[in-house]
Amino acid sequence: MKTIRIPSVILKISILFLLLIFSINYGYAQIDLENRSKLIKPETAISDDVIWQVKAFRPETQFLKVKAIDKKGKIYDVKAIQSPDSPSNVLNIKALMDNKRLPIKIVVPKNNDKYFPLVAIDENGKLLKVIAVNDEGKYLEVKAISKSGNIIHISALSKSGEAFNIVAISPFGEVNSVMGIKMTDAVEETVINGVSVFAHVKAIKQN
Image 1 (cartoon, one colour):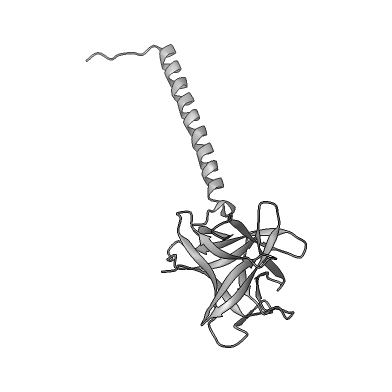
Image 2 (image 1 turned 180 degrees about the vertical axis):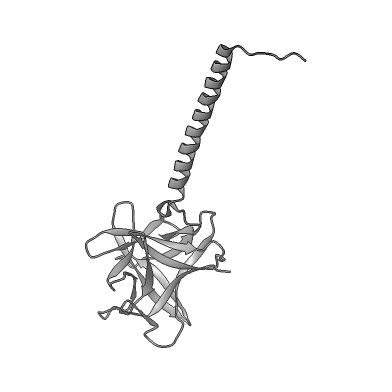
């Protein structure tokens, strides 16, 4: 059988071409690995929790945003949080502050107010009011207004006495009622960061 000889020029060109292809592929592999390493950094991790919007409403008026406000007037989002594997019938209500989720509870009023306020409690025991805000920036305080058994009814109250219901709305259109839950007969249900809590706050599915 005859041996086929490849001219040296063609051979050199072929080798250079293969080296070029290898270097390009290696470069893309390097970039891809770098991008992947950036994507898996902890700060880019995405939570699987389902976030529900919390709103105040009356049938004849617009929805109002429910927020938490600190003593300096800074406003924070209030959301209902559903864990990935948990049902949607009972959800925790939290204020979102600087990547922290502050518990929202009902506390006994310091003054002789007949309504009990809803507050967010930070890690130092400082309280943030829970409010309902309209498009003009005016707000109503959200309070516990009445009790039926272990259920405490919550509303945003206008100065004229109008009561706005508080609800949580899922991204899929589900609606839960936001209400207080009293677990014991004692005035003090628990203590969180030095704050005496009267009752818990949950978003509960109504039958």
